[in-house]
Length: 248
Image (cartoon, rainbow, N blue to C red; front, side):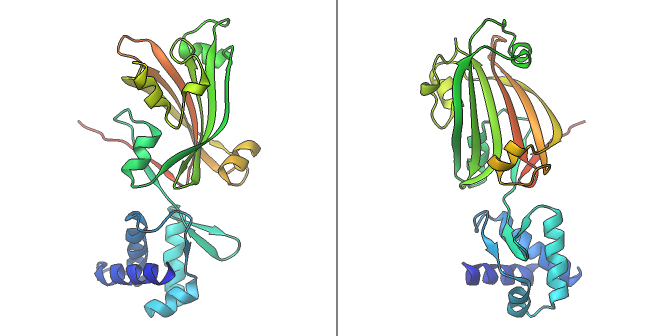
């Protein structure tokens, strides 16, 4: 893996724009390799000395390039000078797609780790979001969402039991279950805000307490206007990009 990665970076470095400073060319080369998905998220990048020697560069040049990549969250520094390749997922806000669809579109393998599936009464927030009464029954499902086995989000989905009466009916994809039952969402309203990772978030997402998370709350509607799902998702800020398309 190390030799292949070095060879790929070397090829991209030769192809990088010649008018840029050398450290920016190196940054572009490494970024191109990362975004090509030819290496897995979490893979360890060779150290500064190895990169410098293999590419005939100074360690200062290498250090400046890595610092830029770390600022953009494409690399993660762990355990001293150990540098891991991150994985950023782009999510368009102009279309209604599932987590699994987003991950597959990036050439990654989606997965989940179920934390709980329970039927109970809705919380006040869930009552407001779903438009249900306090004595109604909802199915609440909490799971860790992964891409190539790397945890990138914690998700809590709430669905009225008239749409899904049992958590045992839901496998890896909630939307596949809804579609099979004739209740696939057709549109959604979503809001976003930032928050720091709680102690529980830190355990689930393998990050520091207080690390930046992007939290979304999404209400999903059927064609007839019924609210079928309320979903709260907490994304690791270092791996998820939300993309807007703006038109005049």
